[in-house]
Image (cartoon, rainbow, N blue to C red; front, side, top):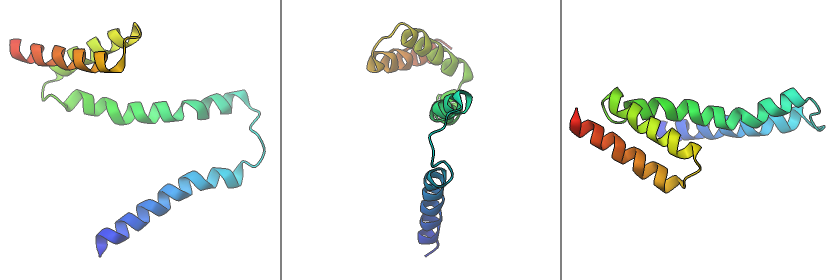
Length: 99
């Protein structure tokens, strides 16, 4: 029974977070600062949730850092996501083998 209550509370909180801005902001937001701030919030939240998981995913900070570095470099050059993910995984794996 308590699991159903947890799910209901999470659904309610998720709904409120998405529905409340529609009630408060009925006109178009004209502030360029506020618009750019709201534009980057999803990317910021995703990064804040993902980055700690990256650092602790391999069990070694060194291998995680090497994999992240390889991923950042390859992503900077515009390679496809599958190439970036596979190369980062391979770099972390090979670094783990040599350590």
